[in-house]
Image 1: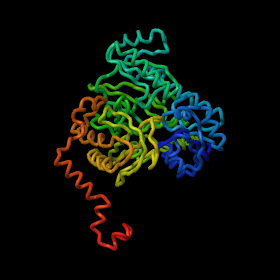
Image 2: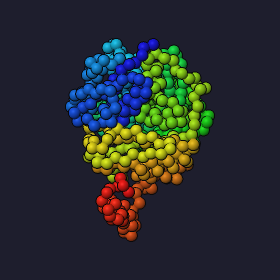
Image 3: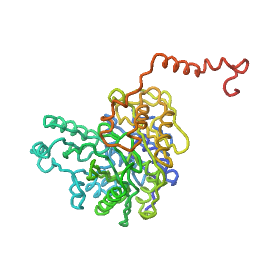
Image 4: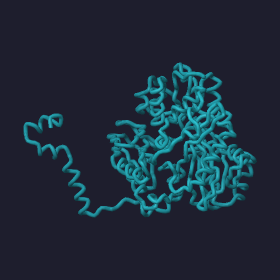
Length: 490
């Protein structure tokens, strides 16, 4: 075993902060990179050391493999954690880290090459008996890719081979939409992952998106930490995730989890990973992809299991065996995560930019707020629009929904539009409460997810309440000399 003493975090925002805090608890020093246009992340304030990285546009800095490895070496680190996105599923990066004599906190390059690449992962899944949807692989013959994709049948989902997180995905419902879908998917994949290879698969209508958190160690042990429901999506990007998946038959849940463990074990998988599946309305499930990294939504699994997944990652990366068997994994209650995005959900999910003038974080029993911005921070179009993750836990799903709605109401970011009101409307929809979710939920119920329009009388009441709470008005109710002495006295 090799002890990690200093960790370079090749990422930014909330995931960098989340890794810093676990590393600190484990007495591991941390180094976090920063860019001239991205200097206000909270991780920079809590890391033991920071280092400037360069790139134009800024996202290029976090995609520069050589620069990241060099920065880790120059700052005396002995390990690199890639977080998620950027280089986290890049086999060449994992190999470069290993070749430099550093520990890569994630699966080995061979496992990423096999399972992190969507095309090879599908092929491997077929050899392990996992069902997959019909597809066409561009790599087989690039010149005939469009023709073979059309032969699969419509609707089609065009995806980047190295993609993830909803990036590099486009749907073509008709033949005349295919060329455009290929062009956009390729451009997105190249931008976010530096890899424009594609494949196309039959798009299953109204599927549920179910994923399984798996974990393997270097001694051949692979377990699962339960499943997550990730069906509430817009533009193939998740908005709300929860665990356990509601209204999922126990037998189907067991089959999906067992298949995920079998697949990961056959791949010789080490560290954290997620096997993603889609479940059709008639209960069939199909392998979708494997994310060979920590997921954005890993906190819901942490909430229901009581485990720290980053700690497990670091311990396994050091060569330690997993400290628990499958029978030792205990699940308690229900957890929900909402992604707080800088966008106007009521205007077609248009991204917003600005400066965070005021940040109000929710609190209370079972509430966790993983935030990637601070007051005064600029919100630009240089990075993904996710600013924070709000996670709650309750004894059951009903309590978790109630806590989440209260927490969303307490979440404030003045200066930039966020989607918390929209998320609250989704949570209070009767179909969501019944667990009737699939990836078409938002489109199907969009007419019921618009904000209520206040009458003039209601508007006047709201304004009156807001005005009465303003400091310059409320202070007049306090007699002198106490009002002049300030709030510390009163």
